[in-house]
Length: 333
Ligand code: AMP
Ligand code: MG
Image (cartoon, rainbow, N blue to C red; front, top):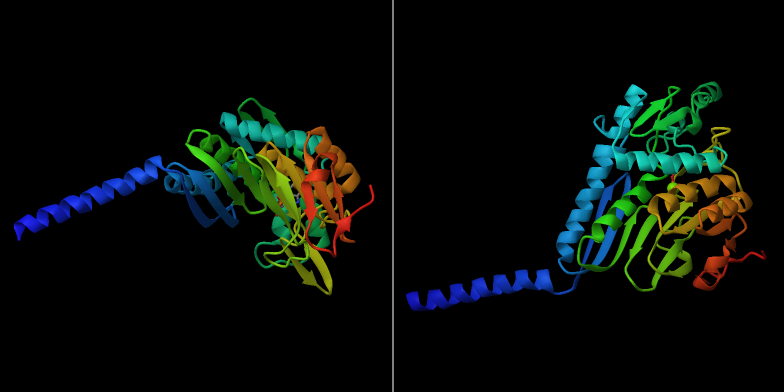
């Protein structure tokens, strides 16, 4: 009896060791999905120790959200800055502010990360309704990215506004994930944080542009691109109807009302996550001509979809896009 137990135990231990080694040295694929940053996130990772890498990515996104960017968590860096009208920040955070200040300035203020209190009045994530005009204009009078002064590692709010990273946080997460992936043995990865996707690895990826009419899981076009960050902003993401009128979550900082630039979706392809995310929102507000010019200033490529189902594709993506829904077509440019 004893003799039999010993070989079984030895085989079991050998099997466990073999399984552990398999994960450590053999390339395998791990898939994961979770909810963070107020949106659905997913990852598909191929490489060594992909299960571990995938868990670490989830932990990193959750930490970035709760410790740094979340406005819901009182202890986050953004909440602390909003409460104290500024304060000390670390170097990385200071770099993010510097990029966003630049986009704010170059977009003529149409990208504005100080709209938090105005967005709260609309309450798109909760019980949305059209805010009272006076309340809206009062809140709007306290906004403006140019009133945030960044000097080294400290920020100073010159007015009582609420900073909101809703338009760029998903891209920041992608940049941090990319830095982390570079320290691992990952071969290829596709990570999506809401409408922002990181394509990582030396291959050609296909990524779909969502149907702006909001049909879940449907794509109207497919992009064939190499390693990059691809962000899409669309009016279909968050909206409500009141008295027969539709209101979406991307606001024109000049009026405080949803931007009406004639576009329903903008996709930006960039090496940088923060730029792809911030610019997709900025381009949505600016519209095709001005938005396209802004993205070009940052050497980013774009696909705009207008209300008439026409696609405006920047030069660098023209041979990399396939329209898959025949009710959409390329605009004559
Ligand atoms: P995105 O999905 O990346 O386009 O970001 C949309 C989110 O950005 C909104 O839910 C708001 O939190 C915020 N936002 C709305 N309008 C603007 C704007 N004009 N500039 C910057 N952030 C904005
Ligand atoms: Mg964005």
